[in-house]
Length: 383
Image 1 (cartoon, rainbow, N blue to C red):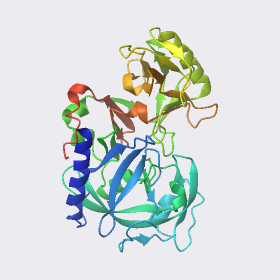
Image 2 (cartoon, helix red, strand yellow; image 1 turned 30 degrees about the horizontal axis):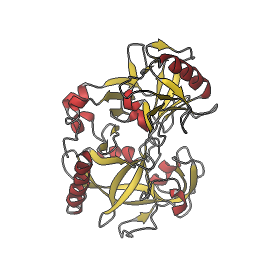
Image 3 (tube, rainbow, N blue to C red; image 1 turned 135 degrees about the horizontal axis):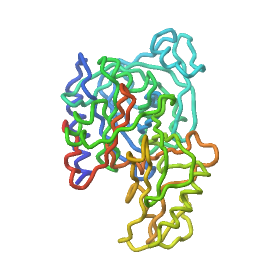
Image 4 (spheres, one colour; image 1 turned 90 degrees about the vertical axis):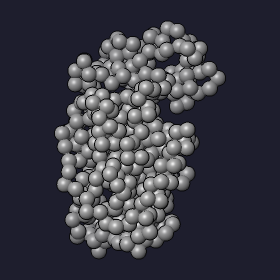
């Protein structure tokens, strides 16, 4: 049912947007439907871009600094133009990247954060068509044209990445600049009916969903990524002996939460002891901790204590355990090695089912988990 609904949403928006190509005077909360690719676990959003809006499938990268795609395939838009190396747009793209060229065109290094590769690209401008909270519209946006080689590791049909990070040239930042409104991002990940929006949770999901959110500060020291701090970790209510606070980077390109090796070792030992109703079995890659048990067994929850012990992000159920078949379920948290970017990188599995409000104007992150009783209310009101 959810899958059918999602297809209808894409079709409805596409028809509506193609018939409404006038330039909007303002951008009022852009909405992009998101689905999860079953083969790669990547989250896919569709944009419509160009003079006669062409659909482009993009992998959602929460930390990405800009939107980029392979411009060599599909329709060549007559409204697309390369950006000058001396323009303000090129200067914005250059922030934090000394390798941007300021020649006749704006050449820059484009990154595929999913597999950690980069290639030269060119900064361009074109018309983006979109659905919004109130009505469809269009906006001029900057993006990078990247070579086909940069698509390695992306899901079949994906033509690039949708960068949603805090950089000046990311999609949320550009759209906020056109409205002079406070920058914010609403994210809801789901296998079939996810949402990315530049409007508030209240506008997208309603007042009830907005009031259910709990807020924690976003770290001001991070560059383009969204980072929060965790004071302690608990397994089945018992606090682990790890030194905090620990920085936690939220990621949509990492499928499972990754912990720095020393932290993972402590958590794995505690979790094995706490899972008294399950039997440890041989690990199934990429997981290191797997169990066999009856389907009725409730595995221990993992709690992340945020700015205080009273504010916790609980990870449990489907957000924690992965069914790998044969009656075996594995802990969906993996060893991230001894030198990760952050001690904790929270992946897509742990973010699914949570409504996330990135209030960048106030440097706060709101989060609240969907429940069965509220699943219908979490459908975007505009859709």
